[in-house]
Length: 189
Image (cartoon, rainbow, N blue to C red; front, side):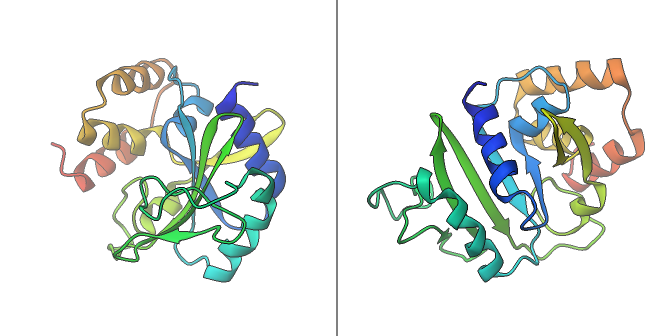
């Protein structure tokens, strides 16, 4: 297994049943069949997950924790045994970040107040109603749908990923209604 696969397998094997979660980002794109090369693994836990429940799963990753504080800055933070979680200055993100097989694994809870019908990849609760489960290496992995990811990729100008997702959706079909809503909720016309 390459680094991102090992990081995802480690998360699913060690903590996958402990909280409500879904895979987002490029690893979610890849496990759904689009040809992208993930650089990291991003796990999103449900916004209603308690601090203590999120904190409890960090014990599974102590073997991968940094031995000393790397940085207090959220962009460079790595979890340590003494400080497995960090929060962004505005308090919307609570997350842990570990290096597994040379790949970054980030587990985050993001709390942003959005209408429950708004579908944006990592924000609010509406995206949770669209979550799908895909088989991957003997696991059942909950993922954000490609249609929702496509809207995110377009909004961020990730042209290579857009091409890969469009090619996959063209070949396998997609949910046009979900795609239209995700595009609309991202302000893409």
